[in-house]
Length: 329
Image (cartoon, rainbow, N blue to C red; front, side, top):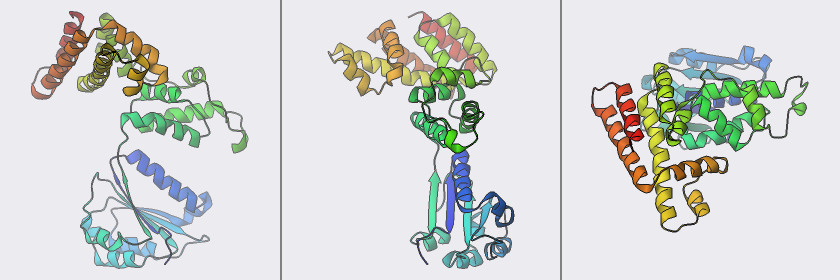
């Protein structure tokens, strides 16, 4: 048997990206018409149900695909499944989707397959926030839209890290840009201006956590109070706001100390990885606070975080108290 992958195993925390990868495998293996007769998704299958399809020949195609979900270790370690895995049908591509963040690699199934060339194990973790803009750019490119890093960051600010929402907004952008196109060759190759992105994208909220963070760091506490009331009523968690603010305050504090030590401001910005299009905003915030104030803000954030995690005080009261204390600095 050659090194062609015949058995994929996906697991992890990011269902969106797992499903995206599975769709790529499907579309790269079967045409739409071939899928009708040669793709089967099995939910909690029995070994006999799975094998009945996996061992069948494809209909009017070179391959068939069988995808199994919602199974447990007893299914994977069943002797008939293990026997199939040792010698899979060369005309069947199997996709196992284990919807859990972890697997037990000591299961017999993995021990039997880990050193074979036809098995591929895929762990898909959630993206870190600093990885999302690059992911947005690449996803936009797949949809035929070229966007800048600033545009990707703009989209992330208003969708958060929900990849399903991001995908939906990128569909709107791609549709708006490519409206009237008759072929893939006519898709826009040049970068879409951010002003065009703003006109195409639609959001369910008038502002986001990041807008609230900006108002706090602008020292516009009256606007911050109003924004927080709306966001909290809409289900936003204060602990998440605290986390984002803490990261920004720590960056500002570190930059202030480095600047005070005589370090060139450009070197400071590079050392804490401030994106070029955020430079002006960062420098503005840096000018609004001194080192002592930033140290106090970090301490207030740590205290608020501890209260949110260890006390029964209402979260909104804890956060509003935090803003009140900031206002008194």
